[in-house]
Image 1 (tube, rainbow, N blue to C red):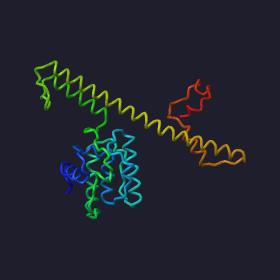
Image 2: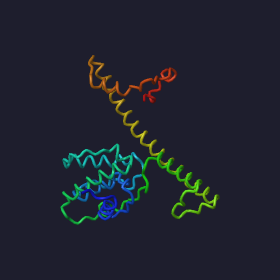
Image 3: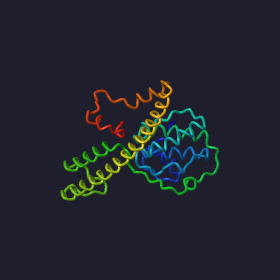
Image 4: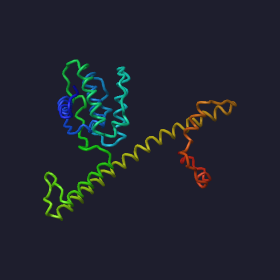
Length: 251
């Protein structure tokens, strides 16, 4: 019988000596990596960011995990795209599988999780649901307070309008700060992958030019270049952009 959320969190916190309060926090990938490390003792924990806060950091953690799965010939597919969205149900199901895997494969040796991650910080945001959902929840809560809903734990009584408004302002300011940090993370992720695509484009272009000198062609390179230069349906490159000849704006 599968463990409950509270049982899984208690096991996870004890095993890794962390303080997760929500299953969603596992979507950062750090805890999953260290569960594997507790079994094999050879996961490169220096490459795992335990306090990851942005999706591109979560993906990097899962790449480490995928490499371990491949090296250990673990055939379980890792639904990375779902897990990094930090939804409770997806991570609950995967953590339940990880617990069963650990029960089956843990050799019973002593494990020092803090030493293995070299004292790396483990704090992740307590709530890691998508930004849009968090903003919607905040708006709903604020509306409930205005309409005489239940007073939040530790909050002000409904009779004080100024106190309620002050809480709403603080909440919105916190959301704005979090959204700004999230946007910054997305921009870094975009630049990271754009740089990779640009390197691929240059390499393909150089190879095709070398082949052209010998009147040769390479079907694979041509297909790669076709993919790089493809656009979404209905999108057209502006004439003035083509006229500038700016190669930096390829994508």
